[in-house]
Image (cartoon, rainbow, N blue to C red; front, side, top):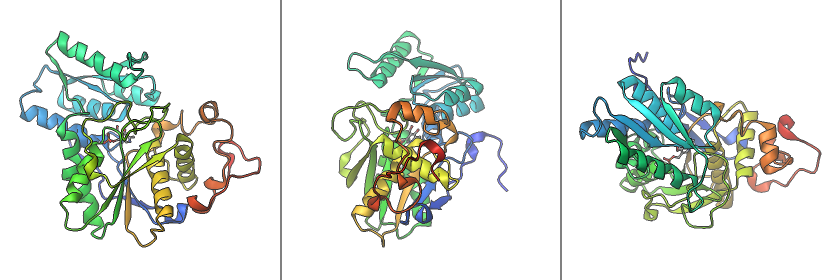
Length: 342
Ligand SMILES: Cc1ncc(COP(=O)(O)O)c(C=O)c1O
């Protein structure tokens, strides 16, 4: 029976969903959403805060500030509340309302950037705002998840070892790429492991992380509008890019089986299933990482009007939601609409 006195002390690290019955192919989905912050970002937040305390950068009276599309903000809000620090989260208009409310409920301040910087990016504008704050008052401590080694070290120390404990014959690991902290931490650990493992990065179409033209991205979590400073592509064997409608379809397909996951999980699962189908990889032991759960996306990915406005009325009108492997699917011709597909 786990008994805790600080919220960051609990994290379920041993739970996997076998997706064979949902997608017709075996893929073990590591669920990272079962902790009090509700996402994988708890690990990065804990590691970065503890390192800043050890280094004497973070002291009583400091004000933590961070740029986050949401989940790191929630994790830092929780840790800041638990440890008695103030925290200001700088996010942008794509941050879900419920995520923002959660941060505020935990006592944090949230600043929303609505105007992109001169290069057209909201992320650049968020960073510029933080730089201005830090220059104006030295009580601000910016952990900077984009460059902080604690971000990837958390996954090197915890996430990847937890996976190989359960899957000693692991062949392929699918990891979504945001800051690339999860990707780099897992990839570095597995490079040193006794058995070769293929590392497949999954990115959102429209992200510039692995090159390519920037494009509209509405689902937070994965993808960047600037190249992530932490990324070392020599650790990545392949990159799979996923269009947002495919992300949405994978999320809804999981939800139809009772598994309500977040947007980036849909991206990773869609990318992984496509890769496994292409590689005829039925014998491989494959794991994918699910960064969070679905409650934070009820007003977006799981809301018919939001989907129709962004992706058109037929985004869910594929038989992909019902049966069969992704590779063998054709578009439905019947008049199925919205989330009423059965
Ligand atoms: C929901 C979700 N998925 C994926 C990621 C990406 O993780 P990383 O920043 O380690 O690449 C994040 C990061 O914020 C996230 O919030």
